Image (cartoon, rainbow, N blue to C red; front, side, top):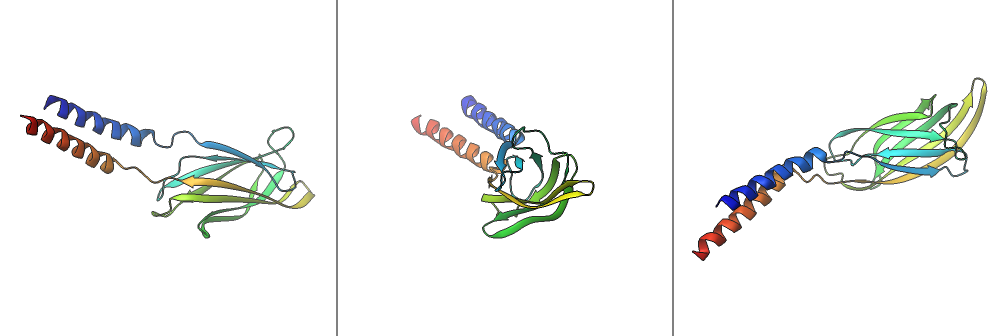
Length: 168
């Protein structure tokens, strides 16, 4: 019986650890735009549905990998199953870095796309109209909740307890 209790306690502790550590490090993806004039770096964390995330973008020179310090005007669309999850238009950055927020619906697990369209770049009065595009394929993961681990722990404990009593 002590082994069963210890196993249940261990599984409960493990469930809390799993949920705490979930989604700590973002995946870093890079793509060069259609015409090769801008590299876009996307920092995509392990995203769960029904939670707010701040997602980071960086606009880089494709040859040097240095941030583009000119003003950049861009649009972002986050799509899943042909539905728009978030759309930001006429965004502007002065230092090559950008943040945007995204919340996927409660049932929004699975593949999604982040589409970035750079519409202009310049400094002062010198502007270049652009139509540079990158598309990132990302993933929204289902949450493996504490409740599911607790049910699993209880089931394992019950099977172990029944098997011990049955052998006596």
